[in-house]
Length: 285
Image 1 (cartoon, rainbow, N blue to C red):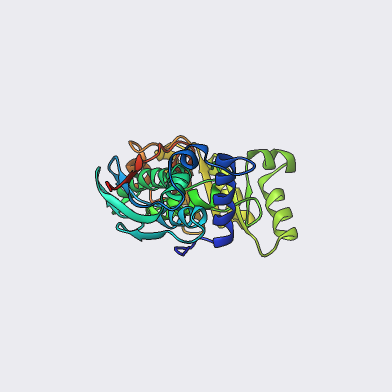
Image 2: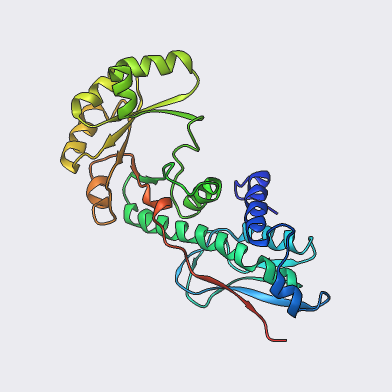
């Protein structure tokens, strides 16, 4: 059921946690149990209430499968990454009515959040089309939802930077201050974790040259103007991948991409994306 680069165990953890939060202990949906016969079966549609990019259909499917004990049938009408319009049907689901309504809010919370991230990311990807630059996400994700939000970034046309503190070393300003110099910090990381990719944050041309001289092949160019960034690209771009980061906007994206930088890092993809409004509509009986 779960594909598209999503890990089933991680998605199950999120889904079960979200449902437990909604259903309490012991789990129950008092309204549905009081008003709907246990044997009643209905069909419903997931419908876009706004234009956007859809992401999270496999996750919604899993929510309905859990609440219906696997008896609900789910048919995706849209495809992950599709641009959809207000009123478009994204999926159809049939199953015990109680189970559909019990799943409704959790399924919508997750797919709306993921589709919102994908929609926002697609705006950046469109803005960078025709340049060598790619939009990257960050670790500024909703606690507990990182795997879903980073998946949504990929679905919207962006790229994941790192999943956490464990898979890529990133030497930032506080690390530089604690270690004394960029070169010293880089050497210590490389000595202790020789197989881990190391990225270095720089704020000046001199720091960029120092980092590359120490061996770094990926630089985060933080809060640089396009003019300064262009100087860094000219000076070290042949020896390292370069990422622009810090206070980037859709309005300034083209100017930064024009410098020849490889990536634009945008925390707002995950920390500031509005949801895409999606509803569950029961079909008339």
